[in-house]
Structure formats: structure tokens, C-alpha cells
Amino acid sequence: MDASGKSLLTIRRKRLSLADNWLVFDGETAVNPLFSVRKHVNLLNTKSLAHVSSAGCSGNGSGSSWPRNKNNINAILMYEIEGSYTQRCCAVYDDKRRRVAEIKPKEAVRGVAFGMDVFRLIIQPEIDSAVAMALVILLDQMFGSSRRFLT
Image: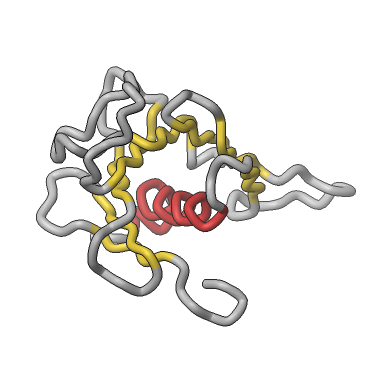
């Protein structure tokens, strides 16, 4: 939400899907998603946590060598999230493999230790802060401690 209480983004879980998929919409709308986020499930590459793809746009002609989303041939991979969310140590990379956001544990100050729910989100100018925060919320849905209580 912004300072006036207006929703910046809406996150909806995609139903009837074999993998964990979410759609992110602009504001409070639920039409024409801005992008989709898919939990990465691959036993060979455990470093990757999730893929963020454009939601069905026809591409930007940049000739990106990143893999395309298998469910939608027109969706281009925008970001890849790597690391360990459970340790609060992960990074978001753009399509050129530049680190655009990073999650790190908050360091103890004067002997006061923080729990795993307290962390730093470091955002570079190449990513919108609302998008970065939406990715943190989605990572918590995928890998957070509340995940084990969901049925």
C-alpha cells in the first residue's frame, strides 16, 4: 500500500496448477497481470528459488538468452531469485544477470540478536521497490515458516 492506503499490487495464487504459481496485478485489479512468479522445482539446480516472468507480453526483442516460461511461450523471464530464503540470504537477478535486489539477515546491534523475521532488503535502482517487496511476500508464501501450517 502507498501512504494513502491504496493498494500498489495485488497477488493472487494461480489455482489448478501443478507447481506453485502466482500472478501479480497492478493496484486492486485482477485483470491483465503484470508478471507471474513460479516456484522453481528442480533437484539438479537447488540454488534457484523462483522465476519471475512477464505475463504474456510478446517480448522486447532484446534477444535474451534466459529460458522462456514453459507454460506461456510469449512470457519472457524478467528475474531469477537465487539463494536460501529460509536463511534470509538470497538475491534477485535481472535478465542480464545483474543483482537488482538482495535479502540479508539483519546484523546484531550492541549484543541484541534479531530473529529470522528481521532482515534487510537492499534494492538497486533497476527494480521498483513495490515489485521487490512483492517478491519478498511471495518468497515467504513459498518458503516461510507459515508454509508448514498450510494444507
